[in-house]
Image (cartoon, rainbow, N blue to C red):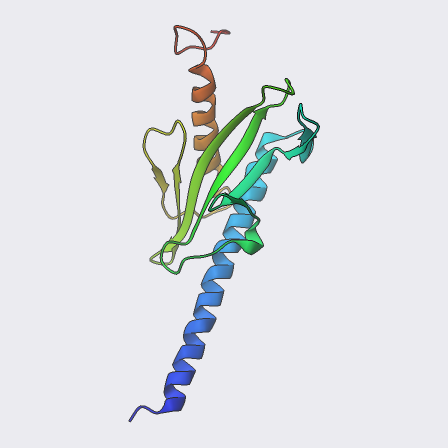
Length: 164
């Protein structure tokens, strides 16, 4: 017969599993963001905009609020979903170029999956079973290629770069 203590023990096991799940996804998110930011070789972590405000080159927003990995909510089934704003050109203090995307990181059958969507993305792109030494390279390269395509769309009358 199942006792009160059996329920308490099972609940404690579930809580521990949730904490482990949440920390695993936060750890993946931290590592991904670290590699994402490093891949740009920004001149620093931040810059001063035309209004004199200090701005980060990469900002993480969760539900529209600036966030970091430690403060992110992790959904038991949907994982972590955040928006990432990236400054791609700070050369004009009044006309900076920012691109944004939304990323969802979740565990599916024990494997890490990334789903990328956002401005200029034609459809969502799913990266399944992200693992290995260079596990984030494909995700980062995809994001950067869409950013570059978005910049090239600004070239009048063509889908080509002025240098081509």
